[in-house]
Length: 188
Image (cartoon, rainbow, N blue to C red; front, side):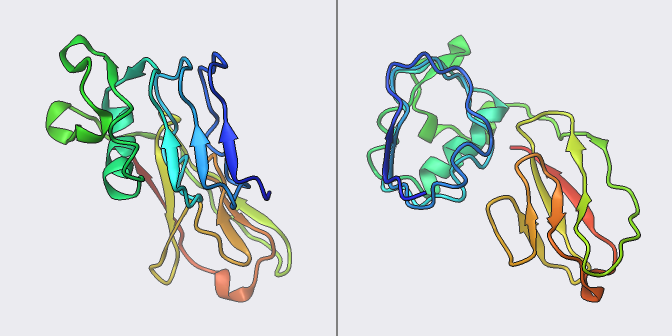
């Protein structure tokens, strides 16, 4: 939990799970260079406050699923990041910096909710979960609460959070939680 630097260089890593870094709130530097990463899950870095990140020398597949990373690099990433991560595929984008990509390069389709939430009747004080699953694991799931506020993965409240799989988790339900919750599936 107090780890500040994480270097996973030349480890042949192909996949990183969506919530892999969620509990590393002290992390300021991550190095994923020289691996076999082609994509990263949406919102992977959301809970972090990174100062340095290294993504170079990976065979990045630049499609709709990488757009979130491009936008994150432009908006939040330290200045050293944009210079390092380059597209490997498709051939039309090979060599282009991920941080320079935008929506005009792609034709992207909206995700489909394949497991919508169901009605729940819960006793006050009990734990509860509302599940919502989308057609692709790279989809970002957010929830709109009865009062209109939006809860996303990485944005923690005292009793309510969105888990890495999109589930809305209540550690203890209160009467104020009553109402209609809307699952919102997004993808670049």
